Image (tube, rainbow, N blue to C red; front, side, top):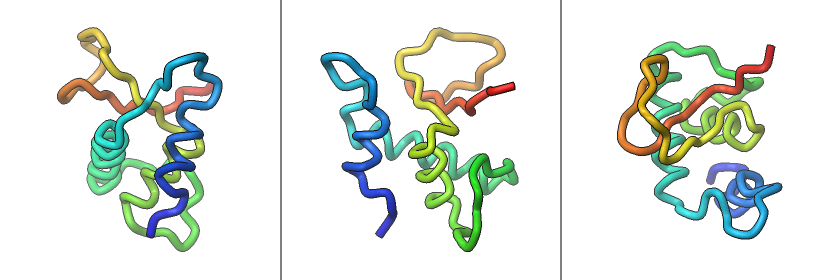
Length: 95
């Protein structure tokens, strides 16, 4: 079983959202985690401490829970962003 749980992850993603939930669909979370896991399989650097976790899906879930990546829905087309469907996984760009 993955930790954090789905309900913990959903609560964290919607933290600070006023009124309606920002992310309310399991499908959205699953697609975002799958996209990030594919990036990790393609040798992208993990954005969180890996420790003994070595599975790309577990790393992607932890990155999402820790706020290292963000789910952007209904985004506009931009030359700098690779898009696939209606969900974009964007790394946190803190300088």
